[in-house]
Amino acid sequence: MSNILTGRCMFSLFASIALSGLLTASGCSSSSAGAGAGPDAGGSGGGSGSGSGGTGTCPPLPVPAMPIHAPIIHLGYDGTNQFIGPILGNFTPDSLSVDNNSIATAEPFGDCNLLPTNPSPVTDVVPKVIGLLHSKGAGKAIATVKLGSQSFDVNIVVEKFTPEVIALGKKRYTNPDQPSATRKPCADCHSKADGPDHSPAAIAYLDDAIVRSIATKGTFPDCIDESLGTACTCGQPLCTPIPADRRVLNVPGGHTWEFTPAELDAIVPYLRSLPLRTR
Image 1: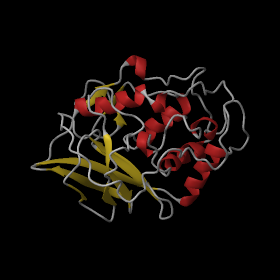
Image 2 (image 1 turned 30 degrees about the horizontal axis):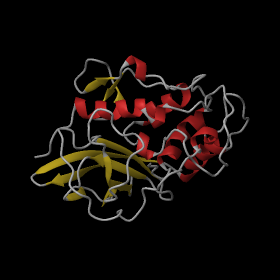
Image 3 (image 1 turned 60 degrees about the vertical axis):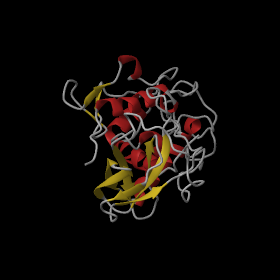
């Protein structure tokens, strides 16, 4: 029987996002120019998670009360681009599988030095990338991670996109029409080697609405349903409060940017298509 992952697990994830790469923009904001990294950099610095399984067998790690660091992964599919989502954990699994390979396939990943960009500040054991999910079609599936007699489920949600939508998101990201102080290329900051990460390593656990809010207003919701990665009404079951001091991006001058409606619909699909960024 699979373990049920609830409040404490997802709080560690969102606390880690709020306290690290995604939320710290190193002085790059809607009131600072920022040095561009080239129009095709795409924010995909660091190692790519599309490797062939890492460097071999990792030494065993202690399995704490929170072995998997997100029970949901949001991916995309457009028939052209590659969409990869990481499974983060504190152990080397015995096996990793997906119940519907027409939706996604799983790749064990054994690079013991490959850390996510947003490690958890809650657990003493830094989570690692223990598996990669590759989308194969739109729909829902479940990945099962096994360790001995224990198994842990990760829900997979794959949205259908089009290559044209991805291209529009890339254009807004790298070279937007009618650029201005509030319509700068996202790549000006995020393509830097030390720029804030918003590859799937940082956003695969969040739904589109939350990522759009971060992109346009620099804010998280008050509470998040840890089982879905969505905003929820505080006080409901599985609804984890985000501390007030972690709901706004720590960016001097703010993180407020303008998008046309079409660009706003396209930016998250493009971010989901970026190579996995790791440290």
